[in-house]
Amino acid sequence: MIITPKTKVLQLIETYPELEDVLINMVPAFEKLKNPVLRKTVAKIATLQQAASIGHLKTEELINKLRKAVGQEQVENMGADTHFITQQPEWFDAAKVVVEFDVRKMLQAGEHPVNQVISDLNKLVAGEIYKLTAPFLPAPLIEKAGSLKIRHWVVQENDELFYIYFSR
Image 1: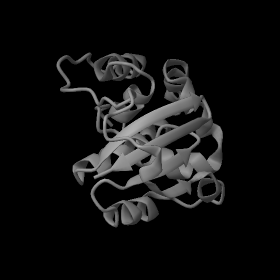
Image 2: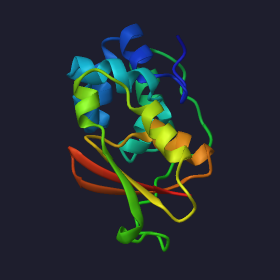
Image 3: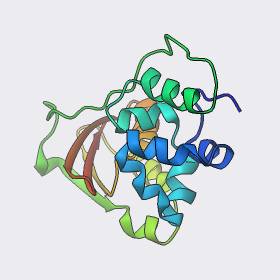
């Protein structure tokens, strides 16, 4: 398997188990992947490009470190990195939060909350805000919401607690 920005994290660590520690050293948030539930849910859909974003790394830096570890050629110009909005946007107003959803219980039960969240987001009316609580930055979900023209704002309380606000 050739390692690219679109490689899924689970695919990477199943194909190259020795890269799990390299990935965790570069993106400490991925230590959570040792939890079998998160490995089955998050790692299955998160790409290395999203992992780089979560770790505040350039995609090229992460990919080349992983490629080097397994003897693959280094690459350049992998395209734009994903950026998440972390400064409070002008559209945010706490009084406009109409739905709050904490995904931690679903994840602990081995369920994947993406379909529920996307369904909820599709019901949002312009100006309404959806608050998501998660134990990690849900990069694939944020990118999917963006593809649906839904804005976001990420608030990181600590390494284990993120609030993501979505609005049309």
